[in-house]
Amino acid sequence: SPPLPPPVLLAMHPMAPVLSLLLLALLCASPTLGFKQSSPRVRRCSAIRMGAENQFSRRGLFAAGGAAGLVLLSRPEPSLARGGPASAAELERLKVGLGRLNFLLDNFDKETTVCNPDCARSPDVVRSYLGLRSTTDPLFQAEKIFSKAQDNLEDVDDLEDYITASEKYTMALSESNALSYTSAFGEYNPGGGKDAVEKYLEKAREEAVKARDALTDVIRILGV
Image 1 (cartoon, one colour):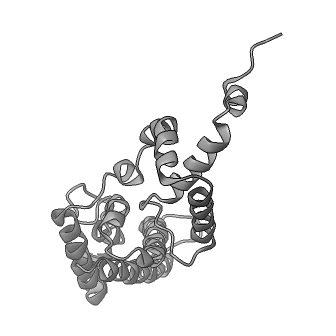
Image 2 (spheres, one colour):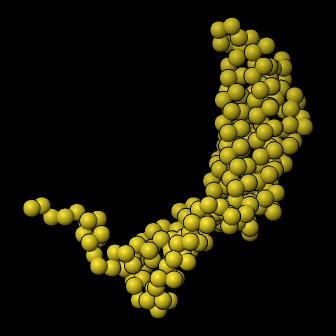
Image 3 (cartoon, one colour):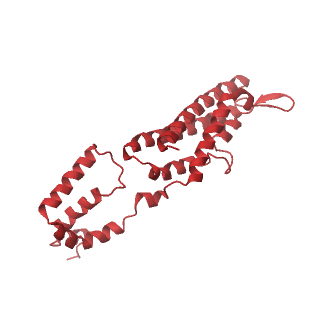
């Protein structure tokens, strides 16, 4: 008969029940999961830990933990995968980028109009302020900073709001990018013209406002 696959062999091991329960308990004890203390996931984990502690003595858990510990050590920590925490310089980039976005929105018509000598709208300026034109822009790949900065949060209860704000920024960034690009070519598209340029540029501005507001929330939650 063919050999049994590794999962089946593991399930047949006499220590399988101990190792399974121990593994679940230790995984639930990981501080990097980032779940709120009142969440169903955490309540289930608490029950698992209590079950493990009641069924096995503390000494027995440590004695049986060798094999399970090897599995845990082989699992990469989320913080390492993200490369966090974010550095002070990276957090400063977010603040500088927010200041630039505020300047753009306060002076939108002037900043998006170029005269040489005739005046015309320049929707691509919006993409520049959003960090989509140059690697030297403060908000260039800001999403990567958001991911790393999860490890800068002092209160795990802020994680949900932080992720929501980060996602809102990413969505608004994508929309503003697409609308700015459409506006730039609005005059040359079929049925387009200067009215089309203005229409899509205004929509790009509205999305830039959403991005600014979301970035404001991110910075507030981070406390920088």
